[in-house]
Length: 84
Image (cartoon, rainbow, N blue to C red; front, side, top):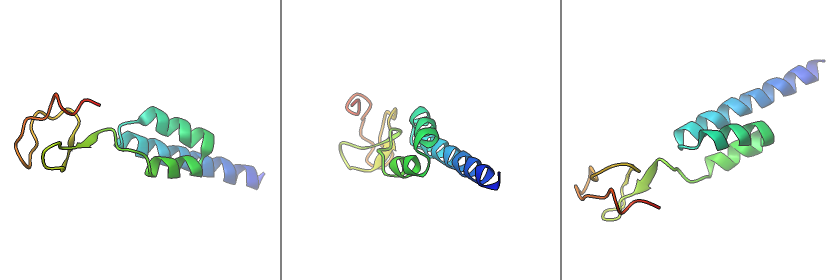
């Protein structure tokens, strides 16, 4: 019985961690699913996955939010060029 409680708690912790990582990277559904299905492997996959909220500026390369109109560093308009 103790083993079952331990593993349920462990996978619940992995589910919460992967959902939080998915939320921060802009992909909460994938975070929840990977944490639920794969547990710690899903957490590792999410840690190394691409950030969908932040993209590099085409002019200077600094990270900006995907829906930004101007880059805060180089002040170039970037809205239409970041769609990928």
